[in-house]
Image 1 (cartoon, rainbow, N blue to C red):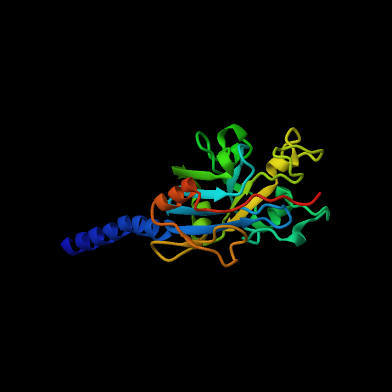
Image 2: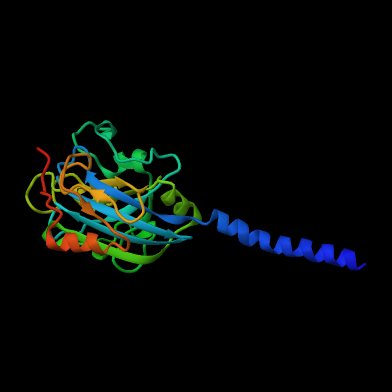
Length: 254
C-alpha cells in the first residue's frame, strides 16, 4: 500500500511539472535586429535600425531612422504572414508596373501587419493607420522605444525565428515636401498613397549578443560607417538624436 502511494505521488508530481516544463520549452525568448534600408522603387535614401527583445509574449521595440519625409506621420509596423516570403519587397513586386511599390504590393514579401508601432495606446493591427499616434519624424528622423507590447505566441515565435519584417511607411514621390498627389491609398482612400507607401524595410534577424552594426545611409549592404546598437537601445537612440545616422531623403522620378 505504501509502495503504491509512493508511486502515485511520484507520478502525480511528474505530471504536475510537465505543463510547466513544456511551457518553458515553447516560450519565445530572444533578441533580433534589422537594418532598415530603402524599399525598392520608392525613391527614399534613408536608413535605420530596429531591435526587438522578446520575453514570452511580451516585446520591447527600439527603432531609429533618418532620411524620411520630415514633420509628417510615418506609420511603422511589424509584419508577419506564414505564407509570406519573410523579406522586403523587390522591384518585381510592382504588380501594376507603375514604377512604385505600394504596401499591398509588398504584402507577398512581408505579410500582414501584426504589430502597430504606435507611440501610445493600442498596438494591434487595428491601429495600422492611426496616423495621430505614430512618429512624425522631426527633421526626418525617428527615435522610438516602447515596451510591454503584448503579441500572440505565434507572432512572438515568428519574431525570434527571423520571419518578421519591420516597415516604416511614408514617401514623397513628387518631391514637394508633403503627402499629396492624385493617387490615393489602397488602405484608406482618404489618404494619399504617399502616406502609406513603404519607405524603409528590414527583416528582424538574430545578431551576436551585445551589438549590431548598421550602415549610415543608402542600402544596408553598402560600405558605410557602422553604428552599433547595444542592449537596451540607448546608443541607437542617442545616435539618432545627434545625427549620427547621416542619411539623405531622396525621391522617385515622376
